[in-house]
Amino acid sequence: MATHIPEQPTIPSTISLPTHRDAYYGGEWHAPKSGEYIQTNSPGTGESLGNVANCSAEDMDAAIRAAKQGFDEWRRVPPLDRARILKKVAQILRDNAGELAMIDAADCGNPVREMISDAASAAAQMEFFAGLVTEVKGASIPMGPDVVNFSVRQPRGVVGRIIPFNHPLMFCAAKSAAALATGNTVVVKPPEQAPLSALRFAELCGDFFPPGVFNVVPGGREAGARLAGHPDVALVALIGSAATGRSIMKAAAETVKPVLLELGGKNALIAYGDADPEEVAKGVIAGMNFGWCGQSCGSTSRAFIHESIYEDVLTLVVEKVSYFRPGIPTDPETTMGAIVSELQYNRVLSYLESAKDSGARLLCGGRRPSDPRLATGFYIEPSIYADCTPDMKIANEEIFGPVLSMFKWCDEKIMIGQVNAVEYGLTCSIWTNDLSVAHRAAIEVEAGFVWINETSKHFLGSPYGGFKQSGIGREECIEEMFAYTQEKNIHVRLRQVGRNGTDG
Ligand code: NAD
Image 1 (cartoon, rainbow, N blue to C red):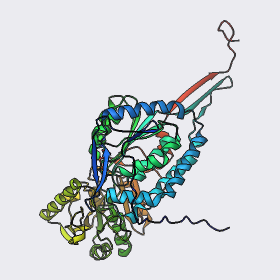
Image 2 (image 1 turned 30 degrees about the horizontal axis):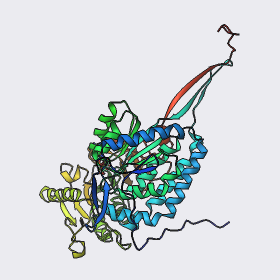
Image 3 (image 1 turned 90 degrees about the vertical axis):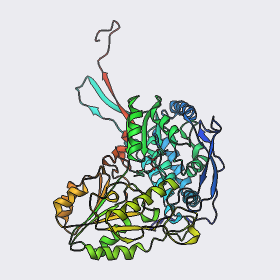
């Protein structure tokens, strides 16, 4: 039997932007009640991509009302019928992968050759959760022949999903899947820096669901905060910074609603002396996600290299990073995109300034590229610093930019202490041929997701999430589905009840 190899989507030569720029809820498009729109710009060129509604708390209230109404119907739809709709959505995502990737590349600055995989990744998550609908089981509890005691998992109600800018389409679609599959309705708040692909997704797929089931409300912090605090929202989930996570927890506390938080990271890559410097260097570069300027929560932005291979790895890392050259994000040849916004660009520059003062050894980058074609965008060359120490600002704080700090180590205990000394604990990548060493280190590091001799990749079914201030909850696995449900226990007494209420 021939193996089916999925076709690689083609990258279109032009961009088609969404026609609708308002909020989508209750199955219709609604202009913001304040009439306020804000311009969205391409970080790669500075060009305007048009206006988008800046929704307020009032708009969010209306969307939540629609989602609450939608819940009444959606929770009664048989799970396999919900799954059928999600599979249809997955197909539409695949069919429009190129177009959606172009929108994201223009709007968030990540290169289209990388974003081309995002729709397929979202589709895979849609199908994964669609396939698991009948696995959202309760339990039966043994209590003897005259009693049946069992539990069921029921949807929670309206779920708020607040999305960051780095993979706007993928997060909007994929992160709605588990909530929808389990019978919740969803209100998505896309990132203000890159709202267009979520609007296009609503144009393409919103109508597949009954009105109010899938809703998209573009806006900024005000709209997000309302979603987190609204009494009719049963659960709020964020992918974003730790600071936003803290605000959302506070808002959610007012109505005692659970939160799912996927937050930041200052992740470590650890290389032992027996590892092949060539493989380690490849891992260091891949783990940094330079293609999208390191703007990834899972990026291993601190590399701890054993002293015996340190200089070799530095040389190879500098050689290999030359593959990443900033360019216009919508050009299929571009290997590295732009920083999402002026605000974030200036933030990254301030870290480069602090690196200068800190005594870290600059290996490459540390500046914006000189190419005049890039003059109107927010570009920074891949920037790598050696001889970092834990007290340096660049080595401690999440930069969310193309800035890698490299450390030389010789004492394992001290090194592990430094790896664990940051407030985050999302990922860690360990490189050695000695599996007992790797396993010991994997147990010792404070991180929710550990690769050994691998980096960067996610695996559907494997729980992804953080220790410490990197978040609460796990995603991309069946536990994500369970998080969107609440358990109800039902106790049935089987003996007949007499007319007067006594046992028959
Ligand atoms: P951000 O926290 O600034 O914004 C994320 C979203 O939250 C946006 O939609 C924003 O409008 C909204 N928001 C901001 N303040 C809010 C408030 N007070 N109440 C409600 N909503 C609010 O993050 P960002 O700059 O868009 O993304 C970068 C951050 O996201 C980084 O810290 C990164 O590590 C993290 N991130 C984490 C993961 C993960 O899976 N762990 C993935 C991607 C990004």
